[in-house]
Amino acid sequence: SAMSSSGECGTSPLEVITLHRQIERLTEQLNAAHAKVAMWEQCMQQLLNCVMLSPDMNDMYKDECSALIQQALSSLEQIEAVNYVECSFPSIPTEAPRIQLEQWHSLNESEWNLRW
Image 1: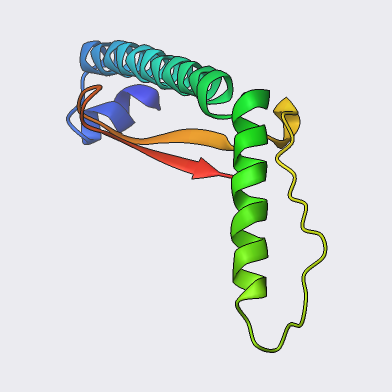
Image 2: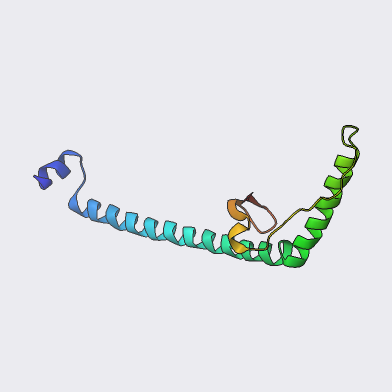
């Protein structure tokens, strides 16, 4: 029976109820922490998209990358001529990199993972 099994392990019904309440509180705290992390990730994602991956910035990256590739290819003796180099950095949200919080100590001391 439930009474004999709880008695065998030395846990009273009151202790079981107390433990269940602690589990519920800890689960709520964990869910709140997960929600806070998700909020920070979404905030950083928006900041990344607005500041670093805006259409203007992507045009700058495209031009810089194209020039570097043109220069690198032209410097190879195996290549006689480079006629056209075009890079693309789309500003489509579905193709934007995903940012994920890895470690958090403060705004100044945090670690993020960026995946394309």
